[in-house]
Length: 157
Image (cartoon, rainbow, N blue to C red; front, side, top):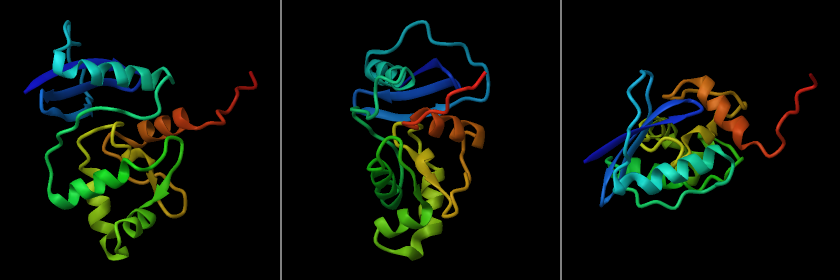
């Protein structure tokens, strides 16, 4: 496995993967040293993440290889269908998975998503529109949703 650390507007991101695909992308709450060189297997991921943050990319085209259960991977695949700038509720997610009774399991799998931003778990919100649970912190979830909002609020001052 190869690892690199890059700077993002939300802090340092850790990217792990190899020639078989990206295994994880996570936000670090520590100040790890940034990588001087990016391993070839991780280069596309770094480029696409930077494009996302510079508003030049709305979807990712990467070879992914996350570790998880069959159900978790099913949830992560479903999360990947949520369009840029859109949100769904946990209830909608469970309905899309075919069974409203899996809402808690789906929320749990959402919280264990190892591919920060690439699999857009930040686009899942409460049925009442509230920001609920986010492994990277609710302030980051809010930032990502604002970043993707097509109608960005202009500052009056």
